[in-house]
Length: 165
Ligand SMILES: Cc1cc2nc3c(=O)[nH]c(=O)nc-3n(C[C@H](O)[C@H](O)[C@H](O)COP(=O)(O)O)c2cc1C
Image (tube, rainbow, N blue to C red):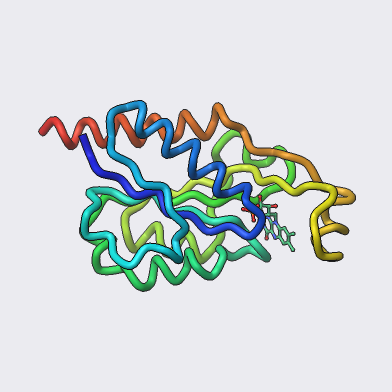
């Protein structure tokens, strides 16, 4: 079994929960998993594989996730990497086919990593008037736990194949 890092960046916490769901699924499959904020990971030497994800704000990942990808680019290039984004406040991400934003597509190309976009979440009582205005018309929780766990299950299956070689 593999040692896996799930690193995430969030502003309001919903992406952290996604990272935890992914981590749970990988653990249940027998992997050793750390789920940590991307800004709190000094090095990735101890990990066989990395799942990196972030919330989307104005079509970009949060800064800590972008920094993580830059800072660890050499180490990431030598590992199996999966990328996820969370954002859309509607059902457009439900079928898993939503293309990644440009910056994430670039990372996906660089690391040969699959990149998926999941629905996001925004509470009606969010702080900040821009966010509250968005939440007024588009608030809600569009994260699909089944979809997220299925995606993590595929990662677990891929890791198991490599570990068995
Ligand atoms: C100001 C603002 C800008 C946003 N921009 C995007 C965006 O460009 N694309 C997208 O899919 N979602 C966007 N969202 C939705 C967030 O990505 C979504 O609420 C996400 O789940 C937030 O994750 P977090 O709770 O981990 O911070 C935006 C939300 C806010 C408040």
